[in-house]
Length: 271
Image 1 (tube, rainbow, N blue to C red):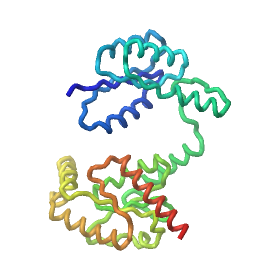
Image 2: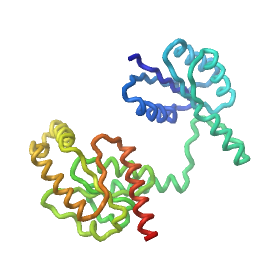
Image 3: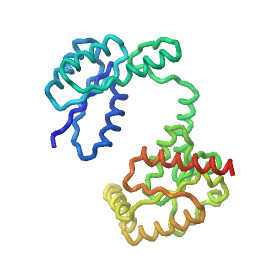
Image 4: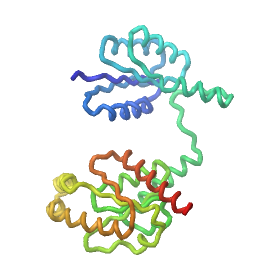
């Protein structure tokens, strides 16, 4: 199967287009893709050079161009070259301008404002780092508490949830060690268990041992089954929902966690 070229054209770095392209690729797991980025385009000549690279190929162009003249030129060049294209900024900018009655500033590469949402996100990321892996006593202050055995993605999930604006703490479950009492007395609607396939966990831990030269018992299936059974018992005591993380991305797991916690919190307030 031939690779599909995904060209990202931008008058800035192309990060916005890159995020969309990655989301698109995830929907076609059996398709091979080739990503080509064309950042910092400043003129119609730059656009023409980019289009010339795509012409006659199995290509899709995604562009984020703020300047109206460049957007219109890109549209015309793509049509002339019979390329499939997607204008990420044009229609949204026009729609917001129409509804708000204000003209867009048309500044390429403009960064999001340092508003309340930004500072809330930074605070949540700092919280995730401070209360990672059961450190400290931040369970009551947390918006979300993750509970699972080692290597179930608790730390990256906490950081990503922080990026989304949620203060996440996580509690590691270690066989033979009782979790902190506070875990059983906080608002249970914000507690989410994490589990994983035993064989997948063995692979992940095996890789870590090779790099860190740790105890081989850490990756043995017999030990892992015991740990997962112990975690299952704790999850039952907590009465929390459990998410299986084996085949899911951090983004997918995070949004499932947010949905579950929101639904449980809403149910507890209306009960």
